Image (cartoon, rainbow, N blue to C red; front, side, top):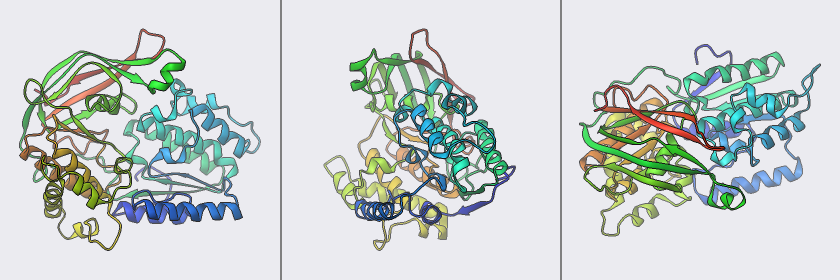
Length: 427
């Protein structure tokens, strides 16, 4: 990674990176992609080793999903715990949670539930937590930082690395091949032919937090500006970390409590959109691929058939390199196969749109481009629009239209506003 004064090791696949990362941190992170049995085997091994020798803060790390390195309910609690574990740096006072939050751009989220943070905000919190742990640890290992962190927030990572260097701590970054590439990818052979559709949001509001939290205090809502625009698929939804991209996508898919009118797709009354989250592993519920394929065969078309079609497109784009990511029945399913199956399961329901949230997560650049291209071709054959949420420039040439998402302050005592404006190339 150009400009970062830290050793970087690149890996071709999620599985290879995960193995190396787990070895580096002595198995502190159980496997979450290989099924329930292996997860609980790893967890039991971790439990037994912790009973024999409780792990301290000697190994600081930021995991492939930064949320997995966060244990407490709010950023303030997370940072206060890290400060207490590590103690003050040599010759200085320990920083307060408020000071750390300000340095890493989390002042407005200090007392917000961690589960409601955006992906970018979660990685900012993981950076701030690692900053606090530095005096009490000997090494920091970071996995795939640019899958989560927008380019505009790269100085935050550089600040953390500089802090560790000044304290004489060891540093290492594990990344996927091409993860930090800044250039847009060529659209040739990847982008499907454009497909027209429409987005309409009227009096849109999204509940922040959960309905249970609203029982204890007045609920906070994010207000979404009126939007009615014609778009072309594939559509790229862009914006800064924390701008509200994923929150808007969840509302369009009906995955969060919402109010108002939410329509996306073709026709006067399109069906609800379906969403593939950035960390797709939480959406499998550890179900094997064979079960996901069977669940899709209920008269609405087989997810298994769509899955094989997506894999065929992926194989065509990747050539011989595809073999490392395709299922072979002798090993746990790969992340590529999991993403392909979840996309197939959603497509076979003919949603109003298929939304891919940061689809490059866990994939090398070539693999991400090949998989998204294959999913896009499958979606367009079914006349389902594709929306890609990303802070990367990779998808610029693939997109037939763009929507820019921005976050503003609300006039209420809590909450914020989200606006969506057609970008260059939109209808």
